[in-house]
Length: 297
Image (cartoon, rainbow, N blue to C red; front, top):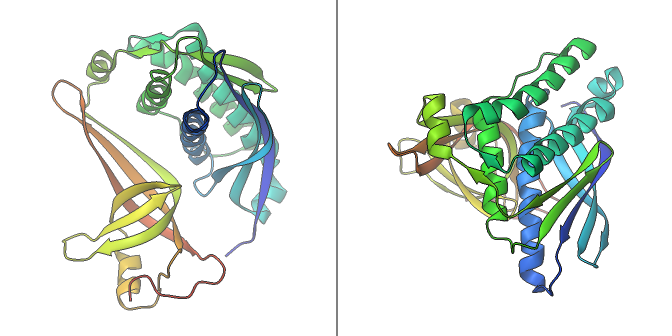
């Protein structure tokens, strides 16, 4: 396996409020916004390089409100690829621009009423991908409207819980944006215009293995993604055969780097019915130090 290196570039995310706040809920709100941005970055990276994974490292924090400066790190890029291309400039700056463009668009247009509203931001970011493709001779995957619908829905879900005088501030070298309560998405209308009742996307994930249910047609695996539980069906039959024959073993606290397909299925009135996760391919087992027991013995 090729050695990997990390590149990093910084941005700020600040939770601004006027009244006194309870500490745990305040940090939870900030954490949730970081999770929204992380998922956005993760899918953006996969459009350029499937193996790349974002990682946020806290660089500074202030407490007048809650102001954080974060080093945006890119992991999983082989050394030979880093030597061939300036990944910090290409992907790091692309991620900063895309987050700024999305949040600044929502600042100016808090009501997303139609497919055309999504196309404005999608076309802007896909145009940047096209420029990257031409300038660096890279093959890229352009981002579909479902991805942007889900990203904006994530921001809306978070801001719906905010007090009306609170706001989040995103700051980067490409610009600043303020996000407040009041984002609205006409999801039924947009999904009807898009003409489908399900949304699929594929991402590269690092999931911590917890347990497995083998008494099913397709084994069900229980993971942690960060600190959140996630249940997925394992579809990588070759890796499963190696697992069952004990050519590979999973120990307590091991994680799997995987390609995962996520499908959001909607009912006839376009309210979200369920979300399904499927492991398409296991890329590697990531072992922490000092593992002792085999999780599935």
